[in-house]
Picture (cartoon, rainbow, N blue to C red):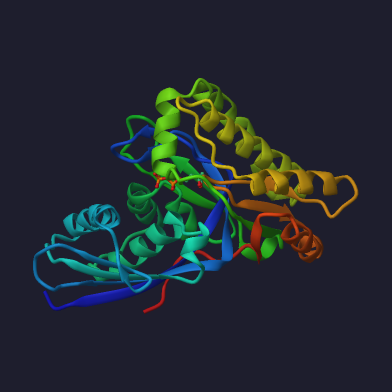
Length: 328
Ligand code: DP6
């Protein structure tokens, strides 16, 4: 076929109620729902070109050839799109992050959302949101959430349904100017990816079943909190989900500890500040960095306070941003 290209951008998202464990690892089907906020500043831009004959796909990340493992993961998702389109051409994919990959902020969510959004039209297809979510989910369980802006809930397919998930926007980015201060923390131990960490937790953690049992309550709370723009209520649900997720990881065999001393120091600083203000609530993904939710008026002071914690390399201030879009 004549080469056909498309470019899309998608921002990273941070889960306030986490996804941690798959019901079906082969289909990459999350075991639970999740609720996130799509960020404004941490953006991946991806260009996909189909139509250079047959052969292996090529993936370039930030101007450098990607590893075989990363390329294989992208190829799996592209293979699904090729099947849908009835084409067999190889793809050349170039992806750039607007944020430092080395700081542990790289996100499979923005990457697979941008890839899905670009590859579908590049293959000559159109797809509705449900279809896009199913495709993005096969790449990464957090990616469908980045298809939409603002506050987003992901609902996984029920057993027996076709694998995948649906996403819906709970509130657009302009409805609540919640701020998120990201503390980039040094000294993380050798990183275990989310994919590996959650599978290890599912197989071996004493607390995995308790995590599944409790999860719905955090989701219910967070949904209401977003609806009412109640920061304290959302913050409590987010901390509950975050610390339970890390408890599940710590309860695995061998245990998984994602935090560094700086992570713990930020937690203590934010909790100590909360009684006097500025008030912030914590969430942490599968790494040492800490994200602090706060009101817009408190973001600058919190960023200064957190920036002084030993081991914090830098802080970034984020706010709710838009969903993925095709730009060329
Ligand atoms: C801790 O979406 O990266 O960030 O589906 O295996 O790609 P895969 O996992 P991934 O896991 C995200 C885990 C998390 C929580 C979350 O974003 O919900």
